[in-house]
View 1: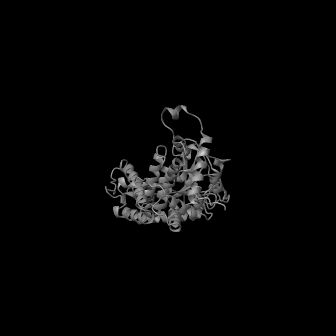
View 2: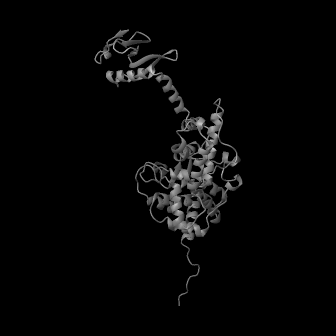
View 3: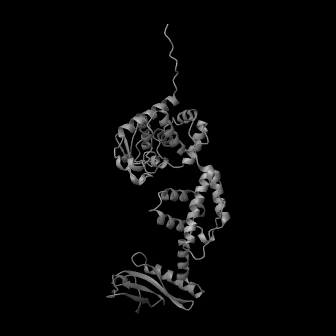
Length: 390
């Protein structure tokens, strides 16, 4: 149906009883308004290219003025006159956007989110270290040299182990995509890692001298410093503690919900008086405990860790080593092995794990107090000799 389109008349155009109807502009052939049976109105442009007829939506009449839509239609039709095909180009651009490394990686992680606990960590790692550099590149066009350059930068900034972790995620993404794409071949090859597998396993625990140096270097009240002390006093995992919310603390109990626990079970930990004192040093800025703004957990851990290394003189250790150190200190303090494992949030397996439903809160409370007392003695050793009075 052809008529003179005017801004004021478009809302009065009658919708069809079913399907859709088109009102074509008398002044610009190929430009018109499409109206559905539900009353939705859109500007459209129709043209022929490559021996076919194409119809493309320009915009909703509620949000786009008629004269603006007409100018856009003229531009599209001018492109067609010069041999272009706007709709095909738009579709190619949309397809390219869906085929970037970032888009494919996000689809993969969404696909795996119900199966892998590590998906949130992987996503965070890619968003920080990979997407800003090569995330917008079409995955089919990524060259091995580009990926190696990214891995080299990560290794230099955050260490070879972190570089290999990123490589592992990228390999998983590309293998997943290769199983779904007809022509994609992963640019990754064997032996691209920086660290041999047998060198990754760690048995590092901090010495008494290192514990003392790190404790003294974290005296200043800062979220990261408090987090380091908290990890040593509780043996908690870094991300579980780092993303702690104030609503998870009830009295002297930290109630870690299953969705944030690696074992996928609710976990209760009593907080020793020393641990509570650490938390009291932090201002209440919002829901997040270890945070600069109360909204987001403290970030930049690699940089803050390097600063702590310089301040303490203790190097070659990682935040996860604090968990191993805390467990070892519990044994040194005489804590029962089963109780120490429960303090760390480890699930007790076998028949005992099934039938023993006791919470062991008091036992864990005593264990954490013993751990805190031992750390206090390490940090501030007292002489064993008591001077005699004359």
